[in-house]
Structure formats: structure tokens, C-alpha cells
Image 1 (tube, rainbow, N blue to C red):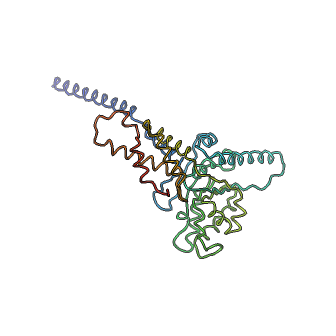
Image 2: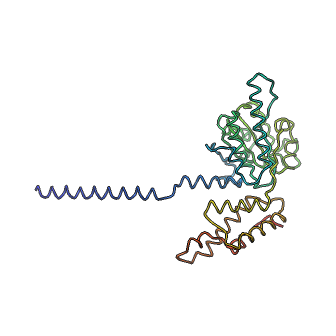
Image 3: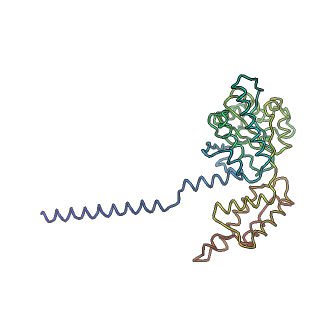
Length: 346
């Protein structure tokens, strides 16, 4: 009986040791795996650079919590947009000086922190709006400094009376931060200037009232094409009085688009074949010279990159034992196939 008991105890000991070895192995394996959170954060930053936000449902807002990084440094590190950077820094300088005047009991002009961003798609408007929200927090204008991104679909409801409630709900999410409304001009369709038949007018009325009610807790940034945004602002005197500062976002040059493409390669561990960079520059030169009104700028480049990566995968998919060189290199063939599927080029 004692011998059997001893065997049982020894068996339990083996099981315990085996379990411990397995546990240590799992811990070591976990330490070798990439940090998923870091990968997701890097991917989010990459997508922000191109102003592309993929909404899960139509009209669903995108809420960006404020990052802990330096917003001024992040602004400086953006590719291109030199005039935009100057405007944002000038705004920040103005706010700093006026706050110091206020602290010393001097008169301070009435300030409006609301902004109008004008420019084509893919020129960084959404990205800069996120940065401005954090700069406003740094300056003491906003307590939280987050941003909520939406458009007409996120503000307009299907029935009379529901639109105001839907707009109020969106504004509530943005309190103490920035409400960013992309393609804001779509709230006032052509031919409806000053009209009341469209639900967009209900959005505007609600928005103007809440901008006054929460003037110390809400900043609104509206964005869209220059001419359409002028028509939108001119449609309502309340908009004209509240949105007095405009920042224009120019289209990217072909050289800047090449730099953006290289940024995607660097972040995703790809590189160009020796003869591919000249081909990339040539095709982007052509794209910029022949773009139409809906050219996507940085979004266009991201799409080209993603299609080139897919083309590389199709080219190598049947090959085993690929080298690091083969796995990381994008060729002229890959790029050529990617550009063939491009749109918004005349």
C-alpha cells in the first residue's frame, strides 16, 4: 500500500513538473510574439496620415481619444502641408498671447476657435483636425482634446424631428473636444440655399444653438471642397459669424506622394526594386498632371501601395522558400499592375 501511494505521489510530481515546463514554454513563446497592440497602433497612425477612416456602418462616428505624443511634433512630421503647419502654429501663437493678456487684465478680442478646412480628398484634413484637438487641449481651450468625426449621414435622420435628436447625440460625444464634419456642404444641397425642405437645415440650426450653449466645451471643424464650403457658409448668417478662420489644404506634389508611398513601405517593411523608384516617380508625375477633381492624393497612393502588395503576393504565391529580398521587394511589374486599376486620372 505504501509503495502504491509513493508511486502515485511520484506520478503527481511528474505531472506538476510537466505542467511547469509547459507554462514556462508558453511564457517564452508569448515574449517572442509581436506586440499586437503596437502593431494596431502603428496601423492606425498610418491610416490617419492619409485621412482615411473606415466606418463600420454608414453614419457611425469615428471617435479618436487624445494620444500622449507631442501634437506639435506630430504636426511638423507630416509630409508636405507647409502652409497648413504655418496656419496652425499661427493660431496657437495667437491663443497663447491672448491668454496672457487676459491673465494681466487686458482686453481680449472675442475669439472663435471653430475652423473651416478646405481642400481635395486625401490632403490631410482629418489628420490635422485630430492634431488641432490635442493642441487646443494643450492651450487650455478644451479639457479632453479628443475628436469625433462624422458627416451628413451621421447627423441627418429619416424623419422630421429625429434629426435634431441625432445631431444632439453626436454633439454630446464631442463635448470637451472637436466635432469634425467632413463634406459639411452636403447639409445644404444645391438649390436649397436658405431653404427649409432639407433635413440638413435642421442640423445647422441645432449645431448653431449648441455651439452657443457649449461655447466653452465644443469646437467644430468643418471640411470640404473650397467652392462648396463657401456656398455652405454663405447659406446661413450664423455660420458666417462663427466660422471666420479658414485653412486651405493644397494637393500633394508628385514628390510628396512618392514620400508618402515610401512611408508606407517603411512601416510595412517593403522596398522598391532598383529600377522601380524611377517608374513610381514617372507614374505619379503623370497622375498629378492628369488628375481630375476627385483625385484622392494620399488616399490614391495608399491604394496603389495596397494593390502593389497584392500583386507581389500573386506573383510569389506559388513559390516556396522565398528569400527576405523576394518577400520585401516591390517590382516595376507590381507597380504597373497597381496603377492600371487606378481611377480619377484623365
